[in-house]
Image (cartoon, rainbow, N blue to C red; front, top):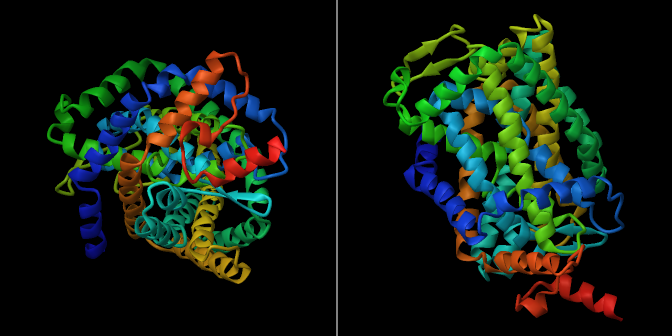
Length: 483
């Protein structure tokens, strides 16, 4: 654990915080605040995607959105938020919001790049940072490094917090042994992933909207029941974020650090994971999917994470531990940091039933994250092998099943330590890569907006016209349509 903590201290030091926040700010200005001025277009694209139906190649735009939201809306929204509050104080939530707003621009850039440089395997699309780092940035070394890091992270590290949180919440609510939960998860996981990307996308499309809406409805009920405390909670979050709250004086560094760390773990902006799902979509223009994916950052953090944070803070079901390891606030006794915070918050209004509801919500949140995360790992395996090797993919599936079981039965501190390493390595490589190479995404956005201003309802993408090289799929696709 000491070694893991030292690695994380290095990965998540001040330069990483500056990279995440600075990168988001840079892309916000370069895209002319697209995450704010194009919010109507993002919403329109999402709702039109719901009605879009099936596609012969790849998956639909809404299915790709559901896959990325499935990955984003997971343990970070329940256990991750609790961790941010416990170790960074209430102010950490403010910095999670900042990461989300800035991260929406970052997500647009990485997901648009992923669409531009995607490749076609059979009737499926593959893409992601490894593809645009090699084909666009011309850096084979950086591309392979990212693919290997992601394969390790999504072949082991990042599955473990999901299964750990499911097992812990099921044990708290129903008394189910963690080993039993781990075994059941492995079986369910196998049923879904052996059906391929279309089954993964179909599962996410059906489950994600339902689970997110149900969770937010329950959170709204709890918040409304405690509406008199809303102003004081908002004030607590903002004042704590800037060292203005006496109880949390001196914690501004922890607030920023844990807010950024849990923010990027939750919404994944800049981490390089969502581009894998974005590339799988069959759309007319890369910017279209980039805009849809930017909206998913808001869905994750501004809605689901905020719902969790307000439930925990408004009911006072949280502890805060200072940098010295001593309690600054001890409202709920000496319990493990994690989903129990949220379960206690919901139990405050819905006695006993609350814990069970959160356990079920955690199951769906985390399980869909496991499914989506597996697809990201598989995509990078295909990139490294340059082909769809069924034997290698089968081996990966069994390794992931082992990771799922391992996570269910191990301690949460060890699990989250592994996860932070996986996220940190991927984020370092991807953010540096897109800071160096982002112009094609900006050209795509400019082209998309220009066509929309000309009254073209469904803009089409021509990389040759825009001077974008090596976007081979789009070149071939346009040539086939012109014949």
